[in-house]
Length: 488
Image (cartoon, rainbow, N blue to C red):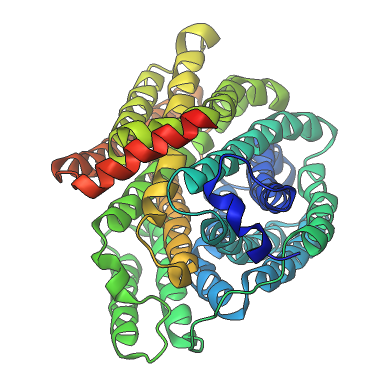
């Protein structure tokens, strides 16, 4: 099977069975990632209680995965372009299987965080590989928009199912939330070997920019660690100020390396694309706000209100269901209104949702407090996530789709890591080691306030996309896209 034989189907309403098979397997990769993230999220309070972790230690269970993911995504995207997307996909998925099993047998926070970091690192190679296979297989315009819409919908479905499974499995024991992804990943590996075509694209000449990869990964890790320890060490302490200075120096060194490297990890010229830059900035704030909100929301419902993991899962479920159902109709909306308008609406919805949750108290009405927020977050993600993916890929050459995907996913994950670190720092600084309900409530409210502020920042970034006047060629492309999708 090869993609060339399926090429005539790319510009027609009907896709071949080979194309559908490829898309289904790639959707399985995203499904696995979303499933894993949401399941572990529901288990966090149980992990904290069982392993006797502080709030700061607990956040590393999330941040370990996010940092492995975000820290190596740029290298993962470049490796997919150079080594072949299918080859990288299969190798990284195999590592994911082993790391999943390792986490299930962890007896302390150190091994658990290491396992999560390895899983994130493997996902850093699978995500850009899967994304770039899609964007190089389906032609830019309605075909690619439709494929990415399906891709996003499956990811949302995985997140929704992960919430319920996470709640159920946590009732049996939180370790099952780590062990279950292992056989799922193994199944995806076997399917990918048979259904994803071998690479037949022309790989760009070049090598690996290991100095660049090491430098930017170290900068990201140091930045998040500095934010996490700031409340205990003091924001003006030498360790914290020094951490920020060194992180900035490493980032500057990375830019210098990229400017002079014969084979840069990131060709800085790609950042001349305004749509790509806006998509990355918006991605940072999208995940930065949501990951912080979910972390605090889960602790609030289980630790303060005494809800079970399963009850918490069902509380978050409406957002995931809305994304799963709504994403199926996003491709026509993108073709009709453009990504910029949809991203603005997405951030407006998210920000209002976070703001409504600021009404949290020592008791909570599901219909009055939680449901409205979840519906607004679901609407925001249903509109925003696929729109950002389409915007980031538009106008990028095929040989750099892996890089574009790596940049976007890096922005998602690093935004999530920094957002979570800031929220955790604020909450820890306010609550300390106190278990008093009033103190915890005050800290949680401050955390939600930070998430709201980050959402507002994302809205400001999204609004800049409306300032630029749309080119006539883009208008014509959108009209043609609408006509083709109507026919299909």
